[in-house]
Image 1 (cartoon, rainbow, N blue to C red):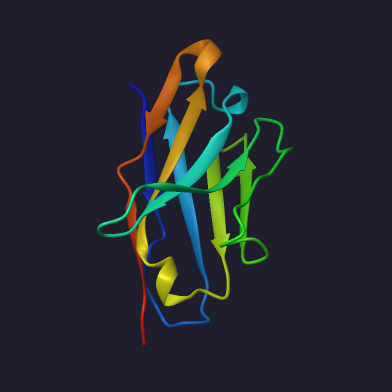
Image 2 (cartoon, rainbow, N blue to C red):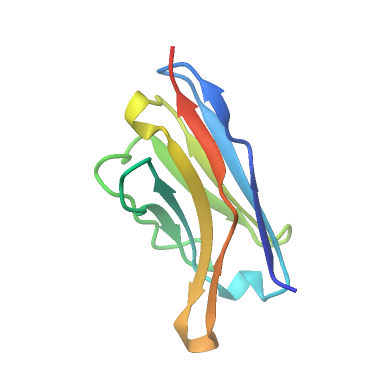
Length: 118
């Protein structure tokens, strides 16, 4: 059974930091490119970071570049998102995703809420 379980969300003040984790099981984690998405109320889900199975080719949109860092530990089947200098506009539900078309992988976690507010 495939599982992706996010954790680490919460309430943080502007300028603060959070580290999200996504623990996975049920598929070959090391072969799957992993990504983090977020969805704010009333907005479409957007990609915030992506990383290949080897840890290369990290992508970030301009909105989070320089503040967010994605990493993975293939021994622990876990992907992380370090978020620094958080802003109120970073408030959203954050989801991790494994997407590998050639193997038919398209798995999502249930999401973790991040709220940035004073």
